[in-house]
Image 1 (cartoon, rainbow over the protein chains, first blue to last red):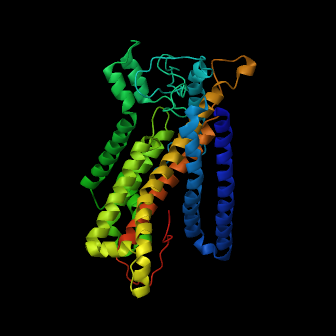
Image 2: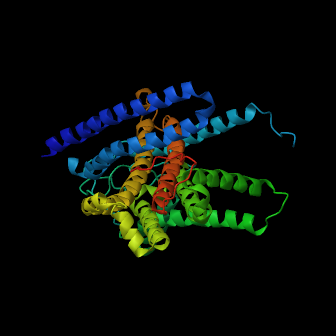
Length: 75
Length: 345
């Protein structure tokens, strides 16, 4: 059972990281494009991008949380 | 403009040198715990054993092995590693080497987070009340700094909520400053971030939750609040949908504080665990040269990342609370655009 947990936890975090990598890439890419189109709005776009990235990152953090919580059971 | 008292390029270099020097000396104290003794069943002074890594004060004092049970051995409740802070050091001092846990030491260990949160609150209250009490038209530096902060925050809230933001700025501004202070305290050596325990973050999220619901009931009336929960149906077809939308909205309202608290907790706790892990790692970094009394401060770059994360997470929490309040207010058509997403989790 411990071996399975030791396999599953990092795998879970890795899969969550893939998802958030894709999401963040899209978000930052759109932000870059928007900044290129309208350089005078760079400040606002940057702020909105950072906030959006925090939301996307939160889902990966939830996966990392499960690692922290189950860490003691890894034996 | 006052003449600078130090040569300008020298000052940041000195800061960096001081930080690195402190990091090196601090890591020296971690040498004793780089390899925790195997199968060590230590007497723990409190319900939560602390510190496999010692991020110690300048004299290199470390937490004795009797106090620092290796984290996670045989108990699932302590997860990750923690660096030593002022409270744990005081607790060890009060314990004085007695084998069974003493009451002051137990109290200190159990209420670490609350003590540091209280410290942050006292700091905030002191600074802000001093500025508010002696308001002048020719502001000194402290008042100017606080005014700048207020302007920035108020501008942010107004861009999300419109001109009614003034009534909600006290709560939201306090939320931001409190979370910011707590997060940043986690990055200071010998301090602890109260937001890195679930208790504080859930408490803050529940404050926001109850505040938002009370605003909804106050501004819309009870019937209007229920109407809003049902998706604001206007014609017959929407009334049909409202039966489906009502449970969804209620569930959504409950998910909001959950996601708020977990996001803040995960980020700050993860950052602190990362720093503590790197401290332990850096403590043993020079063993190949048979140097055991000192290590490398490789946790310093991570602390810069931690500063960024602290500020961003405080901002995100506050912004989300603003958006939730804005969603609860009675909707009316206005021409100005909103800067923040209307539906966010």
